Length: 170
Image 1 (cartoon, rainbow, N blue to C red):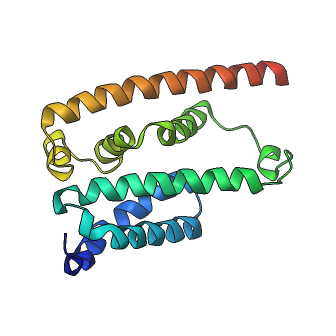
Image 2: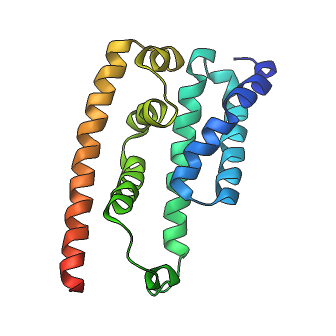
Image 3: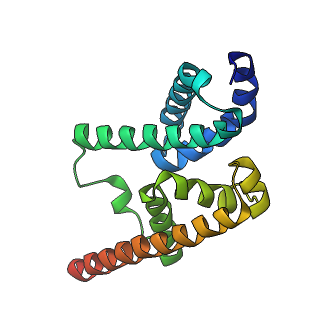
C-alpha cells in the first residue's frame, strides 16, 4: 500500500479502532494514546501491508497494543484491594454479566475478537465483515462459531469464579 492512502485509512478507521481499544483499557486518554500508536506502527509498515488487509492489520495491532498496555498496567499497579467502588451498593446481576463479557472478549485471539467486535458492536452483517476482512462469508461464519465457543468457555469460567467469590464473602 502506498503512503498516500494512509490519511484515508486513518479517516475511515480511527473512531472504530479507538472504540475497540476503549473496550480494553476503559480510559479515554489511554485509548487515544494507543490509537495513535496503532496508526504510527501502521504508517511504519504501510508499504508491507496490502490495501485489502489494512483493517485486519489495524485490529491486530490494536489488540496487541491493548494487551501490552494491560500487562504493563498490571505490573506497575500498586492500587490497594480496597476501592471506593466496593463501598457502593452491589451491582445488578445483569450488569455483572455484561462486565464479564467485556472482560472476556479481550481474552480471545485477535482474529476472533475482531469478528465479534464487527458483528456485535459495529452491527455489521456477515457479508460486510467478509468484505471488510477480505475473506469469505463461510470463513466469517466459522470464525464466529469458534469465537462464541471460546467466549462461552471464558464466560463460564469467570461466572464460576464470581460464584465462588460470592460464597466466600458470605
